[in-house]
Length: 178
Image (cartoon, rainbow, N blue to C red; front, side, top):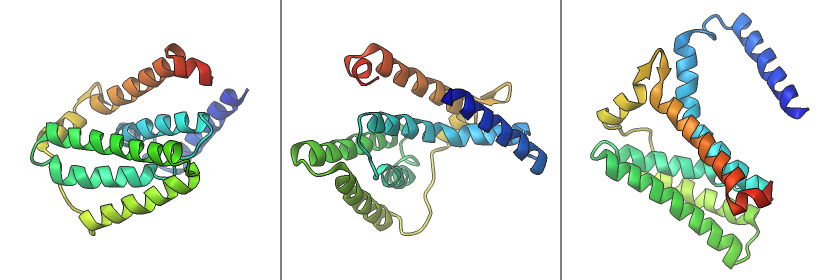
């Protein structure tokens, strides 16, 4: 079973890391890993859906870069507007890629490769150097923890898994792609 093999590899790598890296199994490191995995979790599941449908989206990383650039400008001023702008950016990028691949019938590989370069160019134009800031309210929410577990990242991961579980198991599209 592939899942068993995957868990076995993860377990072996975790044990190896804990032996070779002194701080690997510390609470601080595990909190850091959980906090950094939360945004990636959303992207992983979205990309999984694209791959299951038989396509590829090469622009995902560039979309994340552009969203980060937008966040660095807007989240310091108003959290709600910043989050709305980030979600709208993701939606518009997905719509753009969808139009290229479905309506214009451009190969998804080529279309998303072009989108990747376009988005990276926009990102580098907006922020040629690292910078920006995030509103203290959002930072405090992200850092809040209960019993050492970062709440917002943990809830983000749980919500993402639940949402995609619902999509795959309870919707017409999900039940037909399984």
